[in-house]
Amino acid sequence: MEGLAKRTEVILDTLREVEDFFQPAVLAAICKLANEHDNPKRRKYEAGLLSLSCKREREKTTITMPKDFELPSRKPLETFRAALAGVKV
Image 1 (cartoon, rainbow, N blue to C red):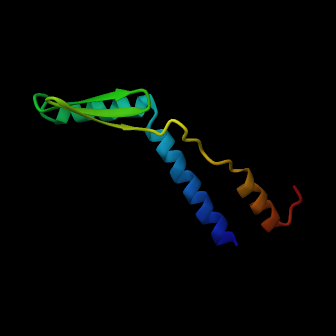
Image 2 (tube, one colour):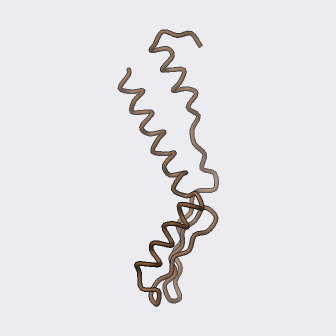
Image 3 (cartoon, helix red, strand yellow):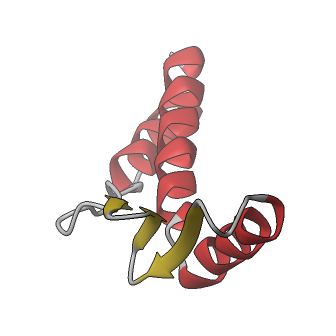
């Protein structure tokens, strides 16, 4: 049961990383680094609101965080861990 709780926690942490990745400061840093190390005549990277874009000549590719994305509640995991520990919630 403890293994199941640990795996669930890893999954929740991974989902948190997705949310953290799409924060404006992170996206701006990624675009800044990409623009410094790529050929500006061929591609330009831009950070938007929860999005990252790559412009090539007449083409633009954008990756966005889903608008309805929300992290699952950790409450069920906390309740499960408390039950494993024998603590009443």
